Length: 324
Figure: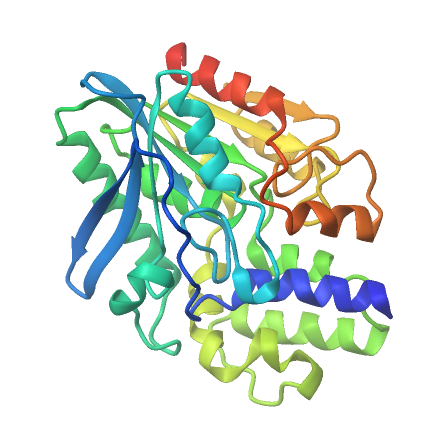
């Protein structure tokens, strides 16, 4: 039963996207506010620069699913790995700028929120397109790259389609199957009756139809107010999209990821044969070193912001950005 609760927690991380998350304190002097104006309100972010000057490449970092802030944390779920902030700090040391942002409705971007029933997957995609336009027009930056983590990889690849302003795209722990199939695989530890109900709900949503009789135990994932978002998300198949990208693509996946199996990265590679594929032996979903799949060991990395990123990841990102 503990494993079931853990799986449910991870799936809540996927779907609870409209809740307020406390922003993190800025401590790095090269980490400066960098915001985007949208019709619904300001989306606030931070630009981490290598230092004074201009002409350096910039990587737009896209957070994963759920109430994840610009640093890669989801505080009310006890998830605080600081993943995206650590990427920003690591790349700054290598002469690469980054921009990361609180998604609309999250933390400092709360004012740009839509009500949960009105939110769509394409809202996130359109926001990323606006960020790309902003970065491409900023003379401090030489080239613009996009890195999406987890669900952020799907958001990023959709936003990068036919976008000549993007120099390269990186999928980190990105799913290789549509979101409905990923959710079903993540819920494989549930009792069979609930698993069957999940499949029935997803079948309905995939066909654009609401599912009104959601059991109490699945309300957090499939409540009526979140079903329009799921319908909008389920129509995208990452395998169909990644193969259409015209810029260089790199796929990075940890082999001890308990949320997105590393086999998904191989599926993405098959769909985009020219892409670089890198499987990192002991890296988990929050991009930290974890050599085992055991629950408690994994959870410890999800809640400790002091743990460093996997070192191989930063080397791969540096090489890709400087020599795509």
